[in-house]
Length: 405
Image 1 (tube, rainbow, N blue to C red):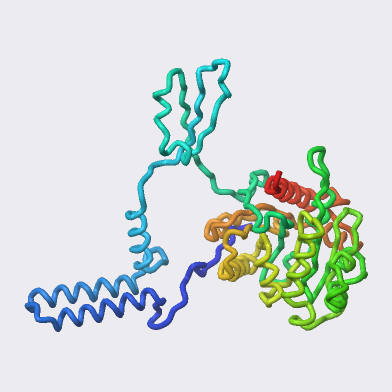
Image 2: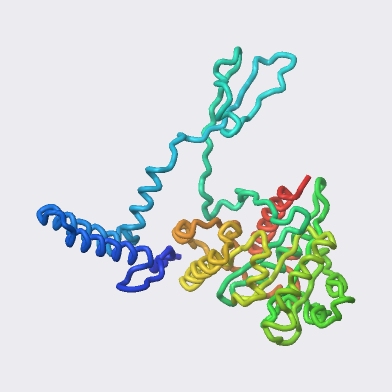
């Protein structure tokens, strides 16, 4: 498959007038007014006129001139920030190895912050110094075993909340959410017991988790309509053989703003925290309504689902821009779904500054498993099942590392 390209710039600003954004328009107007004022000033004309012309040309260039697709004003700001930032050289880690005496605690790894104001360790008698330059290589598609950076939960005593999102329908969000939740719930190791996992279907327009699992039980709508003083979210959840507890979506279409409201969602999430769940996986719809926005902002991790087609890449740009405007820049990572051999998303991921943590191949077994109300990650051994289990191991390892000891 050829490399997928996206023609429109992701960071293109909104224009106000004359094809200029707010900053460029302000610079042009200020430059024009300054040039006019200088030309009308009492300074001698041989001095004032050339300076005014140069000022007008410079402001017009900063506004309209574009270099490599960006306004010259942006490049000027970047250059200024570069030259003004402090110069401290390359960050380095210092490994101090003592003389090996009886009281020697062994090698010590000191970060830059610990050695910035410390005495030079080279003056220590019998100490050997090994300098290790700190580098962080960007994640590349095709490196699934490299763990992403650990981000602490926003609520130290609550569950880790994750969700899958895309502004485009049919990308496989619900399938990924269901598979991941049940795989995590079924994960047991000698060092860690199986986590308590909750799966909540918040797609009130087109819920599909109940159909996928073949479990027409009590739903989120029943919880919403129950008397507030008597209801408990745990009473409306169904159990799955994997160990996951699931709050299913409504069996019929409901109004997107009532009775399943953002306030109800916040109440349910608080109850899940109090019930002692370790992980809460939220399945949301493909539009930024108040309920979906509340769910996204409550999550610690948002996985944008990318289908490797031209339309899917365009949706990844649109979804990323919309979520960054909600302040979710640091929660975003990407999962490629239904990929085919030869798929290359390195250029759009570099443009987005994104990290691909999962690559699920296109596999007909996923459709067959859905039709049979089965989970492919738990029961199959095909390429999609293997990739889903790899994703669950990776996410589970990260979440266990982020839990308090």
